[in-house]
Image 1 (cartoon, rainbow, N blue to C red):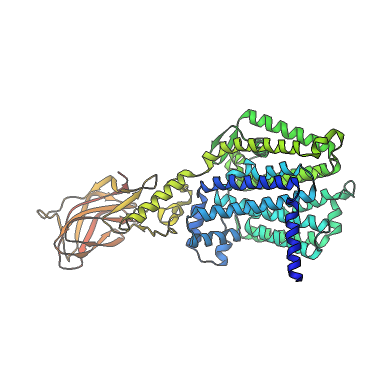
Image 2 (cartoon, rainbow, N blue to C red):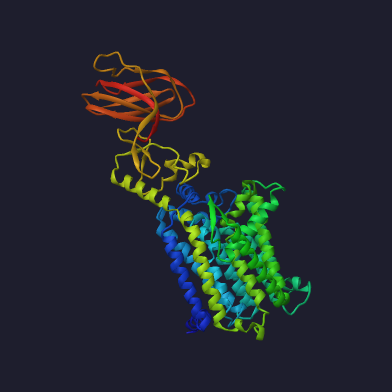
Length: 596
């Protein structure tokens, strides 16, 4: 009975923030987000890093070495575990992945409403703040990209849950031991999922400072540490230990920016990336790869709105608004330091990539809620006491987010990737006798910077259709730019010299016969042989240091042999039948396979 009573109390506490009129409207905002983001996620697909991370996971054992592998400077064991599970249970199935991302964002939004309710109990202003968190276009592109979403929503989820536990602790709604333990678990899970969660303790401390309205001046800055030293020491130990391990196991990629580029990078990050996204933009922009470049009028309007709103909050919000501003500025500074140190070498365009600013939204909402705590809706601010202003602000934001999202969706939804993989899988499933020439996948699927990891055989190895690659076959196919399997032909083919046996060419028997080319060939290439035979037999082939075998069948036939790059030139192909049967090889060509 005690357990049932505890469950009942927990359920009532969880439902309480949704039972008043602002809570019912918040449920509407949540429903809009679930449907809106759900539809956009449904129609998106895997992109770039998703492919090689899935392929790496599929080819790896589930051990500590794999879980702690350096991935482009990241150490994220729980992400690696997720890729491993998906690669085996649902490889390149978008539905489960999209559902997982949507569940993460939904849970994070639910926790955010609970946080807003504890910070601003009964206030209608919670509703537009929730709309900013749930629908900001700043998080859209990252949400639609699986590997990027893995770095955003788990981090935001544990951050908001940790803040909620801290608020319950400070307001006496939770036992100190359980609350502290819950906060520590949140931070541990966060850093094991994505290293940006090392900032969560700093966010928690900023919230704790802003809450201490009973302390004035700079003493407010040290008040949380004095009141709960064990919590903050434990968090420092967790973060410090993780950073030490991270430093030992990873290397920073991308390099730092130059001092001359730093002002432009900071200005672009804040003025053209973060600020327009927070106010529901960009409503007009050009897109270059992962960068979003808003129109000038969008930047001017967005910056103006934020400066006016911030100045007003600082004026009416008292000291708490000042400390909330410090929290937001500190988080932005930390984000910029991480961006410059880890990716600054890619130039100022990297500052316009929403992947590196999407996590600012939850801190901005937190800072705004903290700044509003001491704003008393008196006669001058009577509109803040009721629904009209909050509902109007929410509607305006939702409409702005619709226009801002409409700019981003066509570029970030990855519909071409979906068409490519769908077509490819259908072609593989429709005819299992085809053999695919192993080559780099199109750069729209995965950039060739990864070398061998961008090869077809590596990228699509997890597919349940199990494509045959580079095997001897009469049906060699190349993967077209849209995922179709195309009949191979040779580009810049080198044709072998004709054989000297009338009406046979090269009579390949038990003794080695050499097919000679007019000049040496080298590199990775394919051999196209035309032959006929009266009996079925195996034929051994050798070109330089490479050797292979194919099955020769009665009648006129052809076969393709894929030869790897041996690093040497050679001018003769050696052939030998494994039986007394004679195989007449009438033509041999060498070259690079391409589509028709």
